[in-house]
Length: 265
Image (cartoon, rainbow, N blue to C red):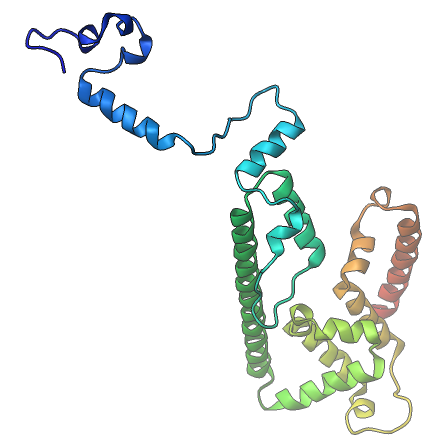
């Protein structure tokens, strides 16, 4: 503490300490004692040097270890509990844990990141399923509103068309909620089916009599709903691989022939 004539505190110290810069910031004995107490609290605790510009990989490895990085990347996923029915893509997990380790993330932080990622994925999957279910409900409601009492009959017609003329790829398309519940696609199949309804729903057991025009329209619609075919049909040839260019040219020629057949006068 300074004396009554406001002598600077450092001037009250023994002469051999007055010029030491360590004491220049203290205004009184209380501040000095408090600093000394806090300094003693730090004694014996691990010291972590901050990264320097000239640090090498081994220097960073030591630094990250002191911050709590596990010895191996696999440790981040150890003890991870998954909700029932949830499976992780192990390739993605390995990529993530390798990145955690490379960036020096602590074991505790890495485990929390994985847990948060899983939670977010579950929430996104639930939101997606909910959205698909809502889309299916709205699509059904729209078709029922348009077809009224004929809804069940028209849906039987659609199923009959799909059963008689659809291949595995077409059934996969119909089972995809994004396309199979699309009212426009369902109505298109029903409209095509009207041309040979008798052979599809409760009709003869022989081969159905389908006009080439109807077959062409159905094939064109299948091509429009196939993402890979759409890509080959719309992507400039110079942006495709050589083998893709061959497939694209053949598909485009096929589509031209189908279009001429489907919409001929």
